[in-house]
Image (cartoon, rainbow, N blue to C red; front, side, top):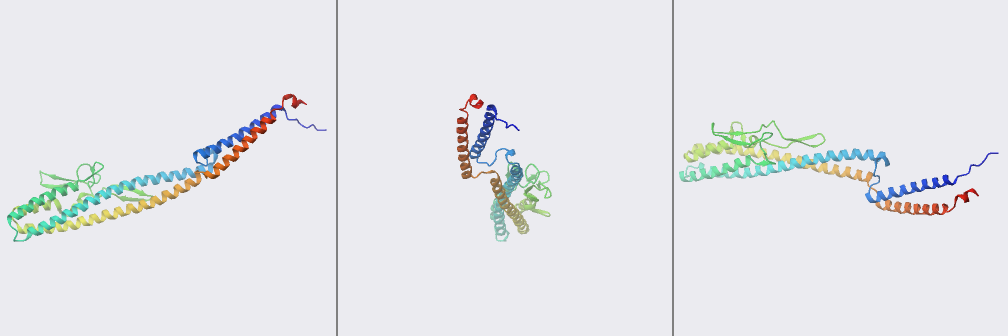
Length: 301
């Protein structure tokens, strides 16, 4: 005849306490989900979701890095485009003045006055060429210092920054763009630059040299085309950056949405679950308290 094991008073008490601790832990996890708005707060609670969330966060970090590169490129190119547009307006004024001075009927006094204005316009162009962005000349490429300087010893204008040394930014996976142009690309062509041309134009004006004025006018016209081509390139770069910004924004929103679906809790369901578990725990407390009213003598009977 087999004997039936009898549950001891201490064993029953321990089992009840174990069940209460488990119920209380479920209530605490539910309270934590409601308080944080997260479906899990430790990777061990949902290892699969935690692993996927880690990958998504890496993607968000990468997209954020691209975003910073896009913002820098956009600001840099927009600044360059704005000042080049100002330079175009100055070229237009220089062309008007040179055309007026090139006629043989223009008096020497008028040409001298035009030379003074040309000198002021030249100074403005030098200032534009040396425009700074974040403390560095925007048209000097990777070089430090000013983009355009005047060498007194040779009476020549010097352009700093090589067209082959670009400021490049990675704005999307596998997409790197040039985010700079040099003053040499914008303000000069082979054997010709706007600053030397304006020096020659001023000399021709003060010397009342009609042929020299006409020759300088032709060079200004050529350099105006170079500037326009450079501005078109800047505009194309800026458009490419804007397109990358749009793509990155869409990608960031998609990854953020997926991460939210994995990590964020449905607050309505979480509150319902919290109330259900809280009621169950309170009921378990009541049952356990009532059962524990029995004494050790009651168990011996």
